[in-house]
Each structure stands twice: as C-alpha cells, then as structure tokens.
Image (cartoon, helix red, strand yellow):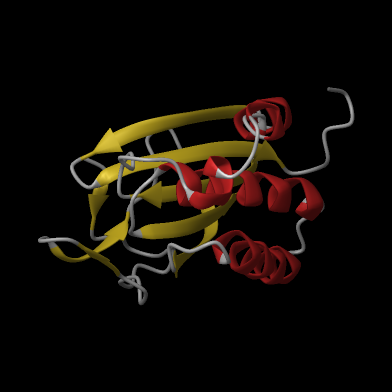
Length: 167
C-alpha cells in the first residue's frame, strides 16, 4: 500500500492531508520507483468535479513557475490529462502531487478507484471525441504507470527536466 503519512524534504509532516473514506486523514506517499533525490514536492487535494482539471492546471502552473521548470507546458498537459481521466473514470477523493527531482518531474494523480459509470462529458460525446489522453501522456513521459492501493489508484508520469522535442 502506498498511502500513508509522508514527510516533506525538510522532514516535517505534510500540511495538506487527504480525507479518505473510513480511514481518517492520510497523505500521498512518494510513488514506487520515484527517485530518492526529491528536491521539492507539493500535494493538492482537488474537488472531484468538472472544474478540477482547470484548477489542477492553475495549481501546477504556479508550482512549476516557483520551481523554475523549463517544461511547464508539457507538465501542465500531463496534469490536465491525468486529472481529466480521474474525473471522468474514477470515484473521489482526488489529489494531485507534483515532485521535483534532479532528474526531472513526477506528476501523480490519486483517485478513489474506478467509477461504476462514465463521467458526464464522456457520456455526452461520440467515441471518437475521447480516449487519447493516456496516449498523449505516454508520448510525453519518460515513464508512466498506475498502482492500485486500498483506497483507489494512483496514476503517475515521470518527465525529463527539459522539453522533449525528440519524440
């Protein structure tokens, strides 16, 4: 299980905790395989609603600007795709985690697991109007994956420090 109390790079407890059903307060821990050289990380609980991708993009933009990230547009696109998938295909709660390491950035989106039915946007459009988000993430990311835990799933993508123009 990858959910539990997490310490920041300064060794202090995370100030923003997620409220998981029937489990009390918990925070997202670093995803498996993430570099141990985390320079900074930030967690954002998000409302599970159609506006969540826009909110996540704004939060990521601000964070990446503070970090001086060179590939902010690429990272924001990955954030948008992963949060949109969570809103359309998964249950709450929903949270975004951004990690900065010497080798690059990691985006993680944690949700409450698969929803019993599709979200309102997917239900309202034709099949050819959706379904490319994870393909986009796969092209932009150096690595990506999903791991399941007792309270849902975490979808993550690792991106290099600079823009990938060679792909």
